[in-house]
Image 1 (spheres, rainbow, N blue to C red):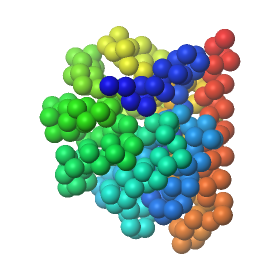
Image 2: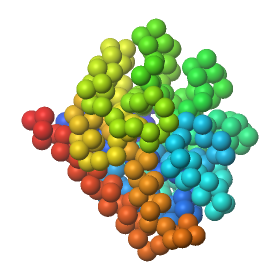
Image 3: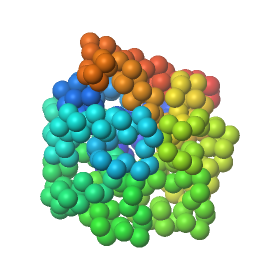
Image 4: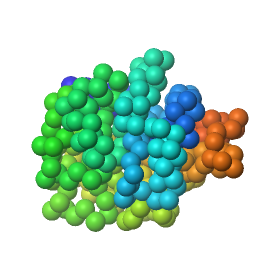
Length: 278
């Protein structure tokens, strides 16, 4: 089984550069604007798109992404509509990998078997479910892999060498390394610490390692892209979106461009890592 994620990382490896992975919340600030933004991401330089599944109790997320989830829920976003969003994106783009990121509860309520069929048909390539540990692989991870979806696992600074093999056992697509302890958007990523962490994970797996949490500027994105297979940016993009909204939290004429412009600037940073290494 080769997914769009596998294909994209193989292409980038041939080009000798890291992936730029973007995260946005499905339905933020409303379903139509959210689709317009996500459609604009590949052209702006996003290699892999992570789409958040709005949930009422997002325990690993910082204030910015929590607020994005609440805006989306208020605008009527559901898991079914999130899959519809992917389906609509796929009408014009059949190559950019899409990963759904979030929590198990909405999938459990939707029904695992039904969700996996619908997600695959919609054009989803992978899942990151932050509250399902390896001990629960039978719940979703194994069925997802059997359905042809990558199950992408998080590793953190507190994941030690004894724990890593369990975390990586059924992981596919890529490994998402959380560069800081704590919630999203809390601190800046440190390239030196990340270098050591990526090297440690690579001793246990052949998979690409992407680094997220704490990347907000093109310079940090470039520094991380030099030492990892991908740089993931979420909070900075969600902040740019939030700042473009009107006083009532509604989209304005600037909303799509605000996210696309920052995506382009960050993508330049990631791509700049290639020249620096040569």
